[in-house]
Length: 188
Image 1 (cartoon, rainbow, N blue to C red):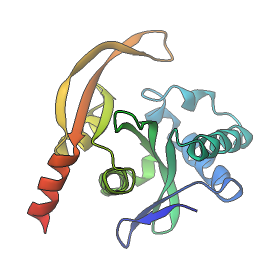
Image 2: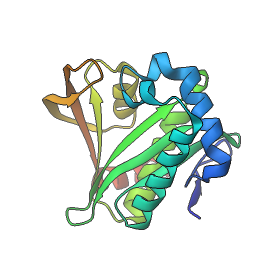
Image 3: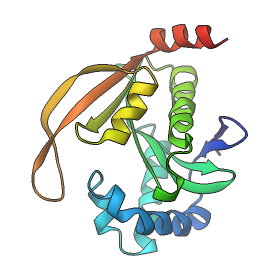
């Protein structure tokens, strides 16, 4: 099973359906008002079985090499998820998606979870580019990209349809392996 400890507080791991579905479902329900404006699927999540089915699908996609969906742990507690939504092995790139339960925000958890995914992506998957797409008005998600020195490549206009049947513009942020390596050298 894939698991990566970023530090003593934060780790990411492939989901274990019978251990994670119930806890993640509860986090989604408790955080629905904050998550749903950016992730419309949160409103549709009404039963723990739906979360279990989603986790099973992510494991199949992982097995096929198409994506990597991980549970975020903080002090060994499931607090959200982070993923390479789609891995493009030909072009050596992937896009990161993530959510965090509301009660776990403002603790630096997502920052460290993204750093863990960068390590895995650039080292294990040998990616050249990692992308974060965030609605232009999703301040917390854009702040994650900014703090991690992602480059704002531009705005993708009306790129994503949301639950209200309106389209939103997305900021597209990217980080190249060469930039990540240069930043890693500065930290050493």
